[in-house]
Length: 405
Image (tube, rainbow, N blue to C red; front, side, top):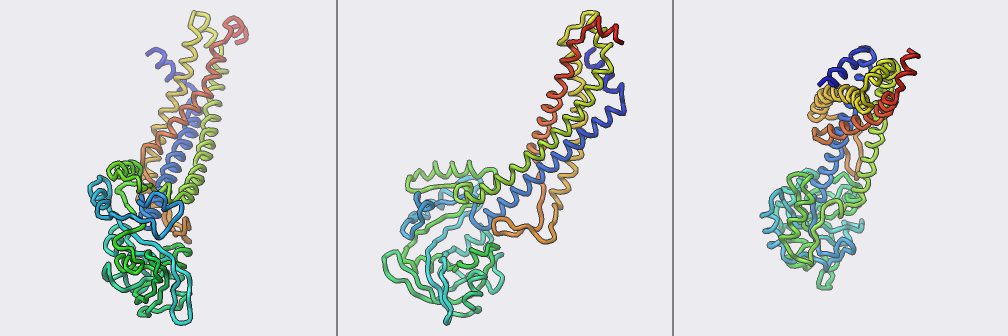
């Protein structure tokens, strides 16, 4: 208790210097909270939108499909997989899909395409695919003889709504698949490469066309919270207990996107390094000046029998008290700023393109991590720079110090 009172007294001895040091810690801590919260919110928003509206958070395939996609590598028992997914907590929705390659033509125009079979009802529920339709409409049913083209593909073929688009491919039985489907809509996914090749068909229509019976190539799964993707993937794998199937989170099937996000998030640590330097310089200046000004006092304490360890504890406690008070003020400011940015975000006039998608607003996120990391960083920096001046004070030679001062 006596040491605590002395620490408070020493902090308030030079009020102006203490205030400036506290302001530097408050500023650094607040900036760190805002930056980490905004970075987490922005990255999680990008990831969630990219996966939720296009790929799904989790995908289920035949175990070797991702390594070497093939028309013949399918998920056969879709009802059983669907029952497992429906019975798994945190699974919000799921959608089966069929993929193949083909050649599309309209009049004298033709182009290579990727055939994508979608279940209209489930796809709308899972990825809100209907929001990508920029002209026309989505399918009227799972077996409708209708097609939706990617925006760029429709331009290449010069196709108009109502045109019958010829499609040529190969069926799973080895036969030539040839048919034509009425163009009812044009979709824009935000990714030009996808929109250049995408030829969407209703799921049952695609299965009949490709002679796949009721088989699919992929089941896309969306979970309620991004943070539960890994645990849900493990739970589904355990419940399916099928070695022929692979249940993989987005970090696996969208690895290039995942790696890009990790590389961008690494920039956060550069910001933290800057904050550490700001805090360290401020604290070091305060502690060093305090030690130099109070050398006679430390000499006197040593002369009356005070142990060196107690002097070290006194100075370290001063640093911690100043840091904790400053962090409390910084936490209040950071929480207010993050709350505002979580509601309103930062809007970009021209939009930001990431993963083929355009984002015009980045929102912050309020989480424990955005406060914990700066807190640990500030305390570590303060203790590191405060320990050496404290050690110097503890080694003060009483006789020599008393003569000099």
